[in-house]
Amino acid sequence: MNIRESMAWLDAHVNLESLGVPVDQARRATNPTLDRMVELTALLGSPQLDYPVIHLTGTNGKTSVARIATSLLVTDGLSVGATTSPHLERVNERVTWNGEEIDDETFAELLTVIADVEPYLAAVPSYFEIVTAMAFRFFADVAVEAAVVEVGLGGTWDATNVANGEVAVVTNVSIDHVEYLGRTRYEIATEKAGIVKPGSTLVLGETDDELRSVFEARMAMDFLLRDRDFGLSVNELAHGGRLISMFTPHAKYDRIFLSLHGAHQADNAAIAVTAVEAFLGRPLGHDLVLDVLGRVTSPGRLEVVGHQPLVLLDGAHNVAGARALAAALAEGFPSTPRTFVVGLLREKDPTEMLTALEVGQAARVICCRPPSPRAQKPEALAGAAMELGLERDQVEVVDTVEEALALARELTEPDEQIIVTGSLYVVGAARSAEHPNR
Image (cartoon, rainbow, N blue to C red; front, top):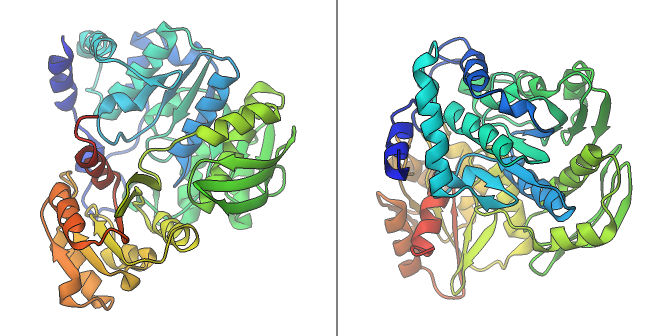
């Protein structure tokens, strides 16, 4: 198959990222299973067992940690595969080798291999299972020395959990995806703890004492806890990012510039450095950490894509992420009037999300529809915005992200700000609109 044919074949498979489940359903529609993934990877030669893995889960911050960890390993001289999700603009983003996206030709070749073995499977795999299996096979084919693997959802029953992570990372635990993971933080933590394998090292960024027992019960060989075994001693605002000092079990790193916005990204950096050092069994060295953190990027996460007016993209898609965005705006960006461009998926509560974003202080809110079958009607979002105190003339409703961004530019003065958020689907569409020829 060529790339067009292979993408059409992939898109014909069930994609829960697009479809989700009914919002009133308590848990998964069917019993969760790894059987399809185990069978698929076995037919591919169990490639996920050919290299050591850093396995990442958490409610927020996974992709940023994955990108930082990958860059640290590559800069240290290793050949590194990484898989993250979801993508912002094109599916190739999900699979990288030494920081470079998989090319179309290789993508199509690997999908053709999976299409050839699919008739021998007892059940048809999902979109995510296929892409994950493809990534594992790709990493084996190019003989990576390490793989950084981000969980798609949860942990225990996620397709990535056929891999055996030597280092398991949990960034944090907040309420999200309750239709799959449970309605309490304890239930969600239990799902995420499923990636911790016997003999592994656990790097835990969640500091809630009430959840610690969930992770301790997994009996990791080493258990590294944020603020006890690693963490930050300095986390200050700096021009273009943060100025941080951190400690790990192996080293201290003082006065390091981090080229990411938001105090929470400093926590992500500390998690990533600790995970990589645990993987290598040694310190990374001040100069390497200084180099990597000073140039690392995380697209769609407090990403500045335009000026006059300032255009900021952030894929905050749950209440915890929205609060982190609001805190970052209050601390690190001018207090000039803000136009929010917001689109939500149907399972998100618009009032909770808009409250967390503090849109009551905004100059205006433009409500749009994310490019997803799971999109929430923008009219519902607009109603919630007015219930929170915005006047009718401060709230606009448009259909597409592109239209919303165009209207935001029309209504926002050059010295003001446009904040695009609410869903990674919205952010991805906005990135494409801002840089259509990229």
